[in-house]
Image (cartoon, rainbow, N blue to C red; front, side, top):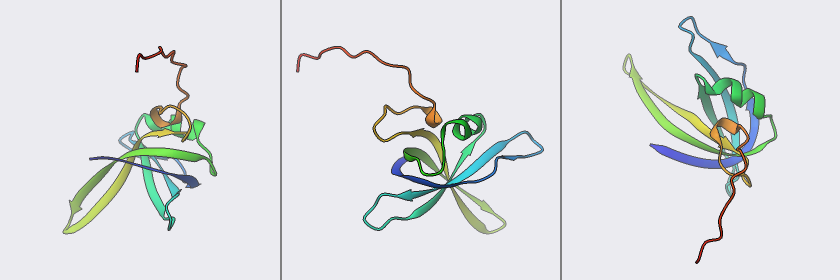
Length: 109
């Protein structure tokens, strides 16, 4: 399931690396809704370094993410895994890495 939300980065956590080599970083986004919400997302694997390099607290961003759920010992957990982060006015790019300029043609309509 792929979803999207726009907001301002409120907090970026420390990069976490596990014994298996798996990496993740969590961040909190304050939404731009009528009633703003603070929502925690995570960035995983190869996207972690690009996220840290190109994003800062206070940035306005669009976040595309997948909803993940799992059961462990009778308890249920949800994760929001960001897979694309971009500036609201910019063309969407993976995890905030600047896009190359794309030439557009005039369309007949």
